[in-house]
Amino acid sequence: MTITLERTETAATVGDLMKCPELQISDDVMVDMAMDVLQSSGTDHLLVRDDDGRCAGLLTRLHLAPFQARSWYTERTPVRDIVLDRAPYATADMPADAAAATMRARGLAVWPVVDHDGHAIGLLSF
Image (tube, rainbow, N blue to C red; front, side, top):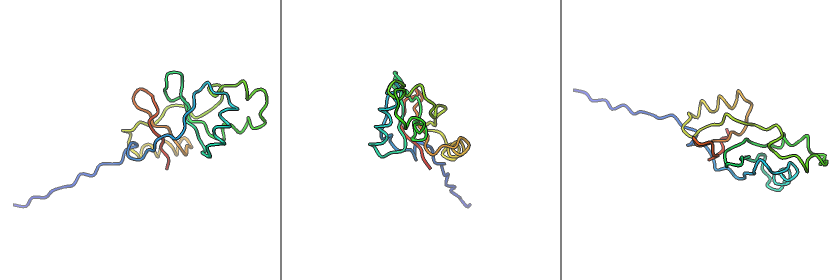
C-alpha cells in the first residue's frame, strides 16, 4: 500500500501583499492643503477618507496637476469635489492574481484595500 501526501498550496491574497497606508487625509481638506501634504511627504499618493472614516479614494499627483497654478479655486475646493480614483476597492481576502488583473485593467499603480465596512486597512501595489 502506497500513501501519497499531496501538498495543497494556497494562493496569495491581497492581505498577504498589502502595506499599511502611510498617509490619509479627510475629503473635506482643501486642494491646496492636499498639495502641500503630498509635496512635503515625498509620496505619490494619499488615501482619502470620508466623514465616517471610510475610504473615499486615492489622490495622486496626477489628480492635483490641474491645480498647480494655486488660484483662489484651490483654496476653496475640497478634495471630495475633484476627480480621484474611487471604488471599487480591493479586500484583504481577494486573490492577489485577481487584484493584479483588476489593477492592470483600471490602469492603477496603487489600490486601496478596505475591510468589509469600507475602512482603509492597506495599500496594494505591484
